[in-house]
Length: 275
Image (cartoon, rainbow, N blue to C red):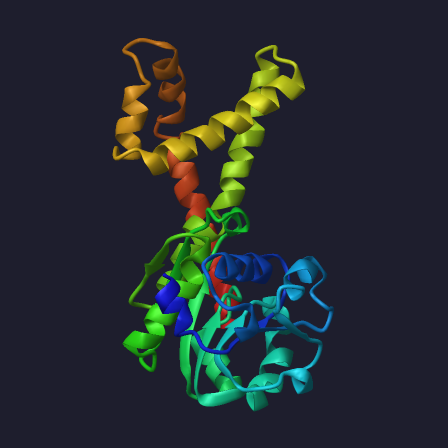
């Protein structure tokens, strides 16, 4: 990954909040030269104070950015993108690669503000904050093989990257992995509440739920088995797990409910993209 990161050239990170900060820390850990990075953040990127002492530049306004970027990573909130994008034009060359992690902002909306450019639209998720994220990404036709490798190196610093061939599929990625951490957190909440209903003290029930969810997730990552096989591995015939799964796997159980939830998130992402 280090050799690919070296090709990123001058990197402009627009937005130094949680997601932008997580990405930047991943780049630095992977060997990107801090002197090659400028963070553009009018609020001073307070979460990143420590990295500025390592050589990363901070600019509070576009006029403070010293040179045009080879790669510009857009990590601002979607609602401020229409205001931010026009101000970036003086900082970009015709060859600048744009990587956007702003939810709901299409390639067309970016090109409407910046002109026809090489654009990668990406959807990371919040486990990127602990380098355990996963990102779905789409590249428009102007993205060369070298640019795609550059985007891959920058995005995978916080976890794997999965590329889709149609931009519309980013909305489905949003429904599964972009919003997915919230579903898992809700599972931990509900599991702890069920433990309390079964007689456990609340703090103990929450500790059991948190570690069960986290441990099962780690087992899925490390194991070569599919989740269905891992489920079967812990399900004894006529045992306790089977009794619980009979409820969760009923026709009106967990799977159809989660399918409805993912489709609702996808549909909302589509609405936001059109807006």
